[in-house]
Image 1 (cartoon, rainbow, N blue to C red):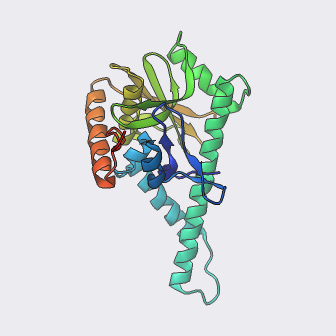
Image 2 (cartoon, helix red, strand yellow):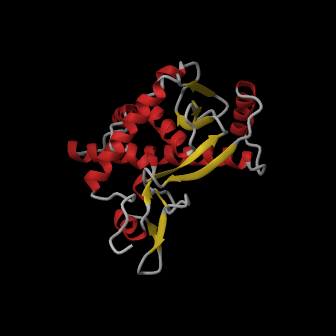
Length: 254
């Protein structure tokens, strides 16, 4: 099941609650209504969705342009019909990219669990051990801040280092500093907050979807951590007010 960001919720104990059992006894994505009833907290990525994501927007535009240039026009096809096929093709490419990203994340997690030595894990662990030696790593740990009312799943962290993996197309030979945006820094700073790391080393790891052996790390400067944390907290406040839901406020009668 591919879950939308709207389904990313956590219990106050830090456990993911991405799905619930509906009245028809079938599993479905967790909604805001469910969160209110179960006192769940939103994920860091859900909060970040409040702000525009320049990297994602640019990728979506490029996918639309690519579809328009490569799809053949059908006989007697109207402009509206062609544009519909362009949008559908772009949507399909987006789903394929998401599935590939999920697979890469899964391969990495299996590697850290000692269950699978995939190509991406082999190259990643070599890079990490060379760049950040003597660390005890925890892969895909889930955490919640009861005080802030937000949770999240951290791709990889140690006591002082927080990492997040991003999959992209055709990054070989590129400068990692050209791939990062403030939302990446905010995500890492929010995770550091969940982990109670006051002065974190934040690392964005970019992995090529088509060639997983190509991995580009970007280490954020420490000075931007507080800025990104302030920006994230502003988005969190906006989200709570716009949704009229703050899981840190006890329900009446409790």
